[in-house]
Amino acid sequence: MKHLLTLLFLLGSLSIARAQHTASCCAKPGPDAMLAFADLAADPAFMSGHEAPLPLDYAPQAAGQLISFVTPDSSTGYGYEVRPAAPNGKFLFVFHEWWGLNDYIKREADRLAAALPGVTVLAVDLYDAKLATTSEEASRLVQVVDQNRARNIIRGALQHAGPRAQVATLGWCFGGGWSLQAAMLAGKQAVGCVVYYGMPEKDVAKLKALNTDVLGIFATQDQGIGPAVVRQFQADMKRAGKQLTVHSFDAAHAFANPSNPRFDAAAATRANNLALAYLKKKFKFKLKA
Image (cartoon, rainbow, N blue to C red; front, side, top):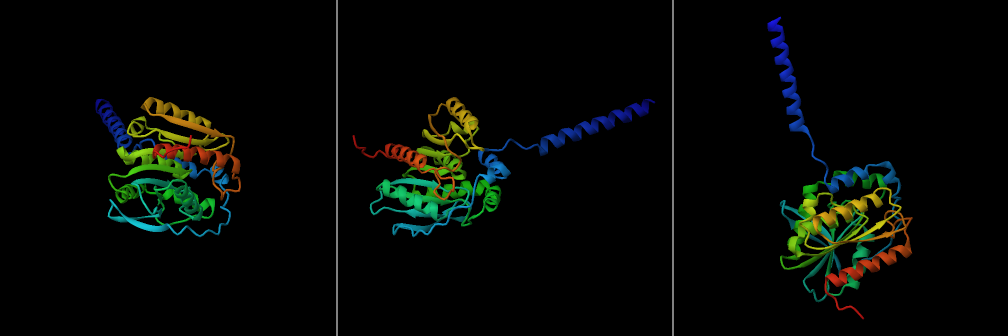
C-alpha cells in the first residue's frame, strides 16, 4: 500500500508539472489591437456590413506615382505617393481600408495632397500589392497580415521620408488602426494622427509612447468598433496621459468611404473637414481668420 501511494503521488506530481509546463509554454498573450481587428474581420456580422466597393474609373493625378522603398526586413515596401513641386519636409501617411490600396485610396491621397500644399502624401500599402473586391477576400487579407511585416513596411516608409520629416498619419477602418500604430512607430517625428473608425490600441503602456494627440472619428451605428470601444479608448488615452478628441457620427461603419453603398455624403464631408482642419493645425498652416 505504501508503494502504491508513493506511485500515485509521483504520477499526480508529474501530471501537475505537465499541466504547468503546458500552461507556461503554450498560453497565448492577449491579442494586440491589430490582431483583435483580424479577429473582428472574421466575424460574419462585420463582414456583412462591408458590401463590395462600387466601380470607380479614376485616373490618378500627374503628381501621384506608385513607388517602392526599402524596408528593414531586407524587402521592399510599396505605396502611392503624391509629391508636391516644392516639398516642405512634411509627410502625411495614409492607410487603406481592408480592401487594399485601390483607386479610391489613390483618389483620397490626391484629395488630401491638393488640400495640403507642400505636404507629401504617401498612401502606404500594407498588403504588398494585393487587393480585395469582396468582403470574403478582404477578411482573408486582414487575417493573413503579418504584424512584423506591416510594421517593417511602416518603418521603411519612415526611412523613405527621412529622419527630419514631420509625419502625420490618417487611415480608415483597417487603416484607422494602423494610423495609430504608425504614429507610435514614428516616435518624435509624429505630429498628428487621425483615426477613422479604426481599432484602438488597448495597451496603455504603448499609448504612452505617442508623441502626438489623436483625432478619432467614429460611427455610433458601427457593429464592430462601436461606442463601447470608443469609451474604452478614451479611458485608456486618459490613463496614458494623452489627448484624444472624438467626433461620433450617427452613421454606419465606413460611412466616409465613397465606395461603400452605405456612404453618408453629409457625414463624410463634416468628418473630412474636421480631419483637414486638424492636419492643417498640426502642420502649422496659416489658417484664415
